[in-house]
Length: 486
Image (cartoon, rainbow, N blue to C red; front, top):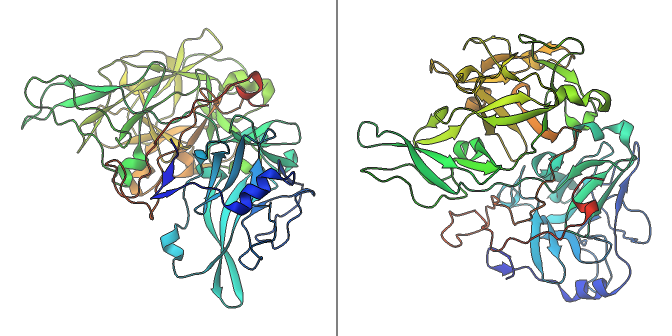
């Protein structure tokens, strides 16, 4: 089944068919130290090294070849191209979209009155990339408008970014996964990683409240973590609610739009802080200082290195089933988790000794029924999460924080009011999940057309306006080199 955006089926034009039959195809993009990829281009030479992708210029004759708008996998099975303006990986044989970068920044509606001159994919010399629209503001002025970027989709690998790791190469693997590699052949960014999954079902785990309202808990697939989709809650996405009355024990079928969902995070992970932009190449993470490690040791922000990776390794263990937070108006409970140290036999968990602003985060003997060690994971988008501690006093919502967005190593972490309630999460409360060796999870390698906000899209299969539903999930063909970052 072919996937579609709005009512337009993804198709390949006659000119592109001719190009695909030729040998003039880009299979990599390279950005060198200090290089800046041009925002636009009217010249294409696929035989030479290219730093970016550019859609066909409007002034180019229809009969003229243009191969600089597509990046191909080496076998020719998959191709990265601009589809309706969006970056998308397409199965070239089936004409099916298997991944798209989505929208951030300026959606089409914001630039509807400006002529679009060219779309561009611009890799950066720190391991980043930007998808831009070049529009004409006046007859003599061009300016690029942000569309989406490396920070809003896929998985960033903090330790492998930064100018010291240039040059960077972007390539499309033969399993449809897009990667950015650094000079050491290490992955700095990948389009793969854990994807959202709906709850398998909801069960009533709290008695009915006044007026017949009960509380419902999400049941996740095996090995998946229950996460609060704060991005959906903040944008008022509509989904399932726990509206149980009477003696019913389950709700209706969960929806991908629910405020609570599931994700298969790595079994052992590193929690990189976000006080420094990942492209700076300085990977700061939640850890512990070198030396004696005993109960009561402070949780600190430290510099991650390969030699000290064991000091940054954690695993999430579900806390008591009765623990969690209930959110109105959906009345869906979000499960709480202990953040347990891994790689040692200390049996210590991240926790606090009091629910107070400024309380230090400590390593404490793990106690699954202690709410002061039970953490709620909430996303601010697909890549960035905050850690909320359960608060039995219910006076305010508290989050794990790097005070003052400090960038110093050894900075003790503390509780602070959660900033996401003021319209977004401050970087001092944002964390990115990586595996114990600093790499992002590539578990599953499942590819699907992600739920994407598209102002131009209409309703489909009962989905709210602007939501593109997955018509088909493609299974990744795996090989050893595809199941872990190079």
